[in-house]
Image (cartoon, rainbow, N blue to C red):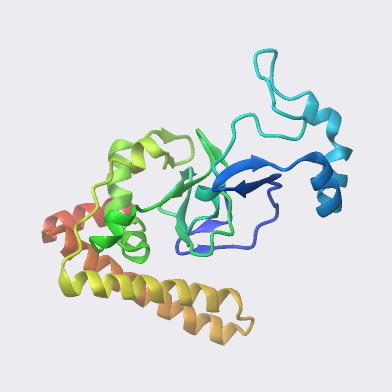
Length: 239
């Protein structure tokens, strides 16, 4: 999950082979003959490690087929726009997979989790950009520090059982609209930074990122209604 950064997903070193397709909205294993014909390179790779795949699991674990997953994943969820977070991190590292191109894998104490927002919440103003701004803020980082498991090296768990306990500040008028706009700007800035090679231009974009980051933090403090003393506590704990 190291590719997941704050507001940005770095190019991934690995890809995930997911030998399934959607049939009438249901995740269905691709038949071996179809896999061989339509995806010859993937099939060649899978057959090269067939012995390892057949040796997976234990006597109590029955796989539907030699290249199938033991615990079937819902392709609708994997393909959906979502926020992604490292499961273990020293601070908030949450990004937006708006295209649904990144399959979240892992769980427990490693890998990446996906976070989706229900239609009802989105209708109430909790857009992905708005929630992304909240979750990447020092406020959320401080909350996680209070409720999460801490690991050696200063790492905290951002697992489901902790993330779901974070109270999201309700969207309030202009402040919520501004936070949504700034979080969207942050996504754009990080994309520009990743594609820029000139040192001077990178420095300029980084300054814009830092300034936008500070504006996001101030808006989040307002949305949570924090006092000056509470802001000081949060910033001292998360700097």
